Image: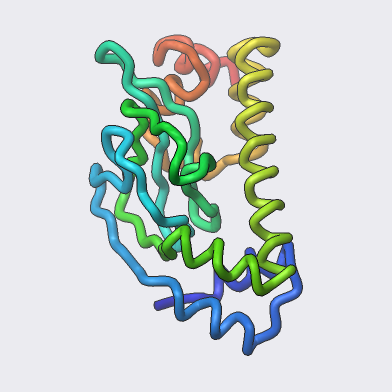
Length: 189
């Protein structure tokens, strides 16, 4: 199990000495998802938080046969459902691998137990949840207030790996536009 990347990402937020990291890392297990395989399907709750150690996934909902992409998770991202395990689940939520992915996963309950013993992990958990809520809020504002071209430019500057590795029709869904509109925006340069 390769842990250098998760250690680096954790250390961006909290102080984590090598001994504490070794104890923490023992709680993770590695899973591999093939392209098209689901981490969460039909809203079934994953009782795990995950770290994308390699690959790209998409989080989307399906309503009346249409898909609406809410987020992409790329190498170096933490992911999971942000509501508490006992909250009502969204039956249409899915998280699916766009390419072969390696995830490091930990049971949500173990993280909650660790948070009680470590101020650093509590700080990390609060930071992660705040960051993810802020990302979703900012995307909502972009969808309401920006033009499709502005949304594309934002994605190009903030998440270039998505532009280069994700199929164009997924990018168009995420930006809330038709694939033809995305093609025209890209041609304008």
